[in-house]
Amino acid sequence: MKKLIGSTLLFIPILYFAQDNVSKVKLSFFEGIAVAGYVDHGAFVNFTGPSVSFVQNQTKVMFGMLPSIRIKEDNSNSTKNSIITPNLGMGITIAYKKLALQVPLYYNAKTSIDDGKWKVGIGVGYRFK
Image (cartoon, rainbow, N blue to C red; front, side, top):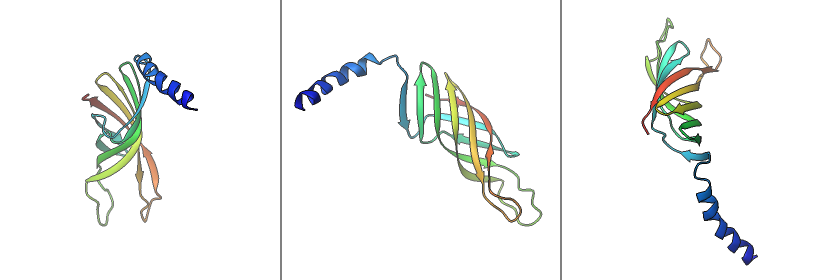
């Protein structure tokens, strides 16, 4: 058993340095990407949040949470919601060099007239890192 553990520990650094140019998957809390886009007859601005990412060369594909500010006018006749609201979405972001393309999903809660539904959007952004 000790020989197995010792030989495994010996090869871990070799495997790590041998995979320098290979794709990597990592977990992060902020990716340094700002995105603006369109969803459900309104706009959104977000910074990518916690995510799982896959990196190959200069391309990064992420799936994660999207802390956002949504901008949408409420067209109801009675009481109205604020035009600007904080929101948490989730989705996929693909970044190549400094350009980012995002497909976010936002949930609109149930109201007295509408059922709760997921809405799909599209956005374009900038990668700071």
